[in-house]
Length: 105
Image (cartoon, rainbow, N blue to C red; front, side, top):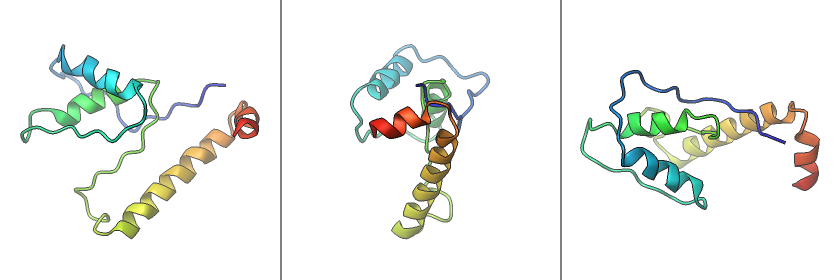
């Protein structure tokens, strides 16, 4: 069964194509789950690059922008993660293949 796709991101119009970076990000995301840091100078397009890749149908994204208010402490981060996971699995539970997923889990 295929998981339903939800989009946190949409592609940005007019993104400057990056022939090395886009395939590298895709390759990283296709590997085993890992903690990955994307760093670079301010306003060079790090977020735009991720948005471009993560808007593809094969990705299911939980997005946390730690620059905004509400993530001042670990508890608020945990509660936000919990809320997003609950929403994700609620949507998933209405999919016709969910019973197979639940059985395998």
